[in-house]
Length: 189
Image (cartoon, rainbow, N blue to C red; front, side):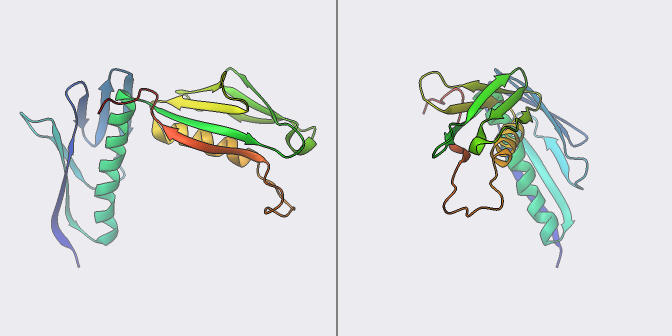
């Protein structure tokens, strides 16, 4: 059964500007600008004059299409949060015998001595994501950026680079894992 009209609203704060034109959303805030296109979805997006809101409409959608409305709203909310506060993922190195050696060289992360192997594993960071070895915490890598999708993608690529194959995963727990997901700038309540 199709729903005739489904509508959701996206609110954004004073220090953020959101421009919507032909399902292309540009969000500008104190930390920078993010742009994303939703042209693959058959939805209406328009700013409401006088209010700091965006209206997202879907006409005659089935169940799967209706789910896309909330997804689009969540993406735009994450963009608003990113240009205000940024996103920070902290990853810790876990090893039982061979210490994992991680170096950050520009936009590349190199992982050496994983499980005692000689192979060097390299992860290229997406544009807009920064990686820093933590100075105060031992064996910690911090990934930060404004775009949540890119920061979480970089964290997933680092974690998957240290997958263990052909061994019992209950025993061999070595790897680099995400421990904390937070903001770069902590929002005031």
